[in-house]
Amino acid sequence: MNFNLTALVPELFFLTLVLVLMIQSLGDRNWQPPVEKWLPFGAGLAFFVSITGFGLHGTMFWDVYKVDLMSQFFKIVMAFGFYVVVLNASRQPTLAEGKRADYYMLLGFSTLGLMLLASAVELITIYLALELASYSMYAIIPLRAKDKGAAEAGIKYILFGAVATALALYGLSYIMAAQHTTHIAELMDKSWAFAENPMAVVGLSLFLAGMFFKLALFPFHFWCPDVYQGASNETAAFVATMPKLGAIVVLCRLAVLLKPGLEITTILAVLGACSMTFGNLSALAQTDLKRLLGFSSVAHAGYIMVGLVSGTPEGIGAAAFYGLAYLLMNLLVFWIVSRVASDGRNLKLADLNGLYKKAPVLAFSLAAGAFALVGLPPTMGFMGKFFLITSAWDHGYNWLVITLVLNSAIAIYYYLSLFRHAFTEEKVPGKVAAPDNGWFASAGAGMLAAAVLLIGILPAPLFNFAIRAGESLYGIVHAVGGAGH
Figure 1: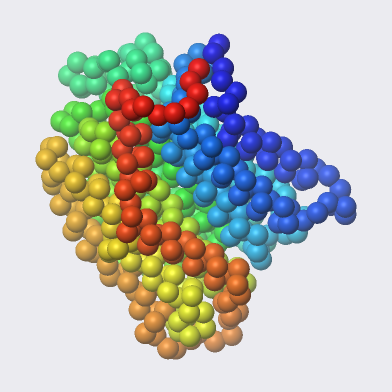
Figure 2 (figure 1 turned 180 degrees about the vertical axis):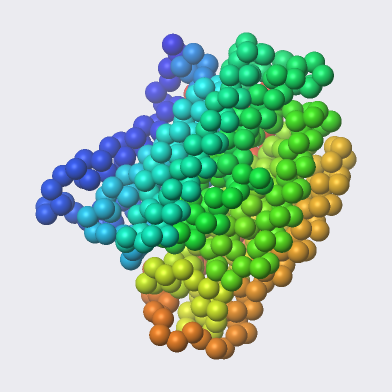
């Protein structure tokens, strides 16, 4: 078994962080320091540790675990997402004091599973890492101050997750029977045409269904708006972003098996078109802000399919870059939702009325997030969609690109309604808690908004990183400094 300890430093650091949280959750709370006092520093250090892994490469554990540019790109993004989620949850009003260490421990376990998922290059390993990331979510979602809606959301997530897991395992058995291997590198040399190998195509379709559940792609999206609505605002911020990254990195790795014109590629394109259309049309009718963001997630899952069906390294790189954009845009909006709902309630659109007077920094940051989700320049969302469109055009699915453009036009209405309520509506709902307008709320919103705008203006460094990561999956190697195995 080949083993390179240096290449596993980000995972080992996260494991240490989780173990410390586990010890704190088991210990006597009378003498322990509050977890919010030290965990943000630990999560921030984990982000910088993950950056130090850039350029490392190697294949370990009998070729089931691979450290490469794609895995390092997503590990850095996941570590940053965890850091923001920890900061956001540090002022969670609906979490019992005695459960805080347990809550962060479960968040850490889920993130660790997602980081392992980023490097998994064998289907059974992918499944095990996915389950490690999922089990923590089943316990986190119901934690909302004895809220019955949270308990219902948790049950729905468990039931839909069980169905998706069963489909993925059933598909895995078909792939093993038809292709006699579960290593992605070996599956690249196999046929995936339905006429030549129907069992393998059916198996891969079912296995992908497990990823579609995490991504909330139509028709595996039914849990999404209900779970967002039932979970606390801070938990919804995690559920809406981090598991989606795990699904995207697995789909990027499996996309190398597909070529334009194959039946399974066309299925992905059709599901992508249905997802973006259904998600956007459903979001038009929403007044609950988290349900609106839930259906928005369904639409964005469809957008990511545009890059995956192109069959090119550029398309996979564009999908990876859009995953980063999706994370930042949604963390920004959920940060503002959590600060406006300072008492932990679910927000209606009307709760944003007059926000520019009460919390101008939050209002302008919300505008930046809404413009980014629409895909308006000069935001990161615009560049993400632009890269998806250019990577997929003239690769057999131009109709899907046109569908993306039309759906972006539909999305303008409900995203800009956030802006309209925050800046043009004056009638404020009575007897609700005032927004958190302190330095912590403003600084977090301002920095996330600045990141969304700055990367939109200067996307080249991160996008080139994502393109090189996509090329590495196809065996196109660039000279990158670092340690091998």
